[in-house]
Image (cartoon, rainbow, N blue to C red):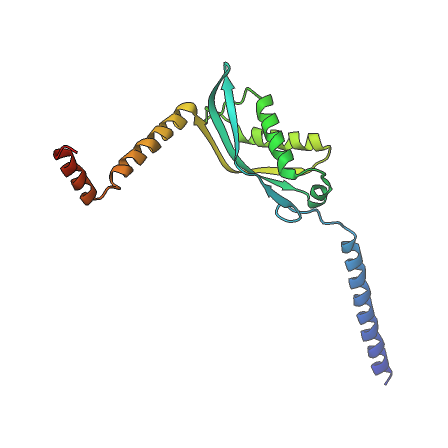
Length: 183
């Protein structure tokens, strides 16, 4: 009987010890604030397509087109008194115009990482806190003035070619008959 009581006390002490250890571990782990990962805890703000005209010697030589996605902290985003997209687009323009050394037409030597970091730092500096964590590129293009001119001419000629096919064979035949009759 003494052995039975001793075994019961031993089992109860082991159970109490394990429960006490579990609660202490849970308490220690809950005190550490988990840092939000890049894909959790942040909001994503997507801009519309931004078209920045680029100048050289007083003339437009092309357009930089971009659609960017910004990762921002939701609490700081709610604290802004102006629309976030207006702030972001303003800073994109300000950064790109303030850095005339960026050569958009030279695609091989263009440093996109530097541009993204510069835009991020520009926004954070203007706001006065780390609002933007990362800038991601959804779309980026450079169209020279000749590219735009060639696309416009191509569109016009394809439209003219398409209009000729809109007349049916009956309409063409009647207009030819009227022309032959002297009308």
